[in-house]
Length: 366
Ligand SMILES: Cc1cc2nc3c(=O)[nH]c(=O)nc-3n(C[C@H](O)[C@H](O)[C@H](O)COP(=O)(O)O)c2cc1C
Image 1: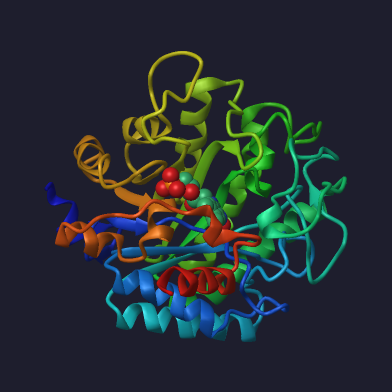
Image 2: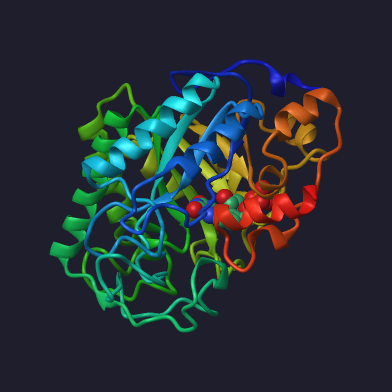
């Protein structure tokens, strides 16, 4: 086994090992977005299961249009901050670090406690259909086009949420710039048809990303870990590619780094997948080659692929999604040489809630 189980430095943090829990939405907060005991049990299980770092599910950032799913947690008020603090404390007591993922849904909007009206870069629907395991909606709603005042307000939401996250004791923040949510929508030529300085050229499309990183960095200070998750594909269009190809993706990575991101978290169907029409490079290769920024890789990491990936990206954290859901003690099982289960999607049916998972586990145990 490689050094993947050794304690490691990541930005200015010390982690027990190089395995991270990938962010995964579970729509199990209170209806008003307050994190609860069930969620604390859930996150603590991954900390006890040996993950050096946990990244939370996408957490909404304002009371306007950032929430995308019913029972999604937020971090916009004192009650939500305190709910998260209880979770952070449990995770720390179990020996792991934890980042919050800050997410604005944009056009990928299914339900909200605050509004019926999504807002997005342009009045464009996501491809495909809403995700049935996050709610009963069967059609996307046409979003209102964000004004420049809306863009500034959304950035303020990220800033306020980042301040709450720091106060809650989180070890860092991951901005959600992947999978077709708001920041990713601005980067995408499918979603972004704007003709102002937030649309058109890639430099314009990534303006909101740069402004958000700079604003959050100013608010949390230089010592607090801040990064961004990036992908090309979205939850309903996994093969979308930037028209600017590899050089465009590198431009985004460098802009994020230069704006103050400490890390980039790449996600793709498979970490090793050639990500662009030209050449063989994966998203992770582009970040590694750009340099000057820490790396988290995600996509298809399991008990078989992890040693090669750990060697190929020697300084990266390895974020695990589905295999972690199936095995909250994935890291401990690897250490003990125990069998790793595959994810049975019945665990997340009919909705991806923690209650359904508990019910599924009870039936399995019976
Ligand atoms: C139930 C579920 C919920 C997810 N929710 C999020 C999320 O909130 N934020 C995010 O960035 N990715 C989310 N993802 C994507 C995962 O973080 C990860 O990128 C994906 O599962 C691929 O990694 P894997 O091959 O290790 O599973 C979710 C995935 C699943 C299965």
